[in-house]
Image (cartoon, rainbow, N blue to C red; front, side, top):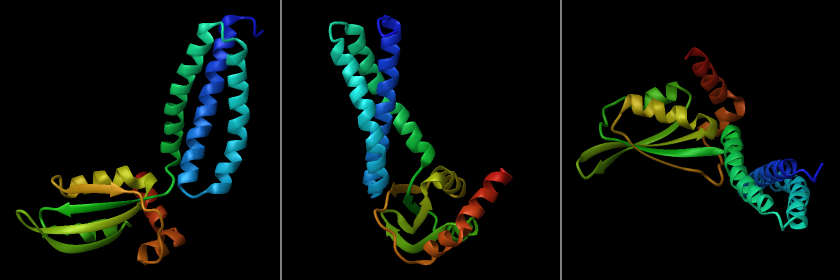
Length: 189
């Protein structure tokens, strides 16, 4: 079976897609501080890696195997990133600066279940409303849409917090309030 060039190329391609997807997920879990899950994934990752690399090294005289390995590696990066996007692990902190401090921005976002800390700020062109919003990553894009609906000119910066402790919002997440509110909103749309 491995004597057939097409079968060999397909196996190498698939093995490398799986390997690099595992690699990508392991790195993400490592960066998120989930060391035991990352270690568990790495066991499968290394087995797949050895199998794929072994196939290529045993058949280095066939350039199509090397090409399949390289293409599979690139495709694995894309597949791993897509899987991570679907998992949407962790939280995002979104800083928003609205050019109109009179909009009931904070109330509208809180009514949707978001934890919002706001303050008045002064920018180059006058008064502003500054806000900091914490949301699970799986709701991040919906938050951006909501912000742009309320104020299309809002300035938005997002980053991933390393650690979260205390506060009103954390209590609501533990009770499931934000998740339930967000899911109800999704169902209504």
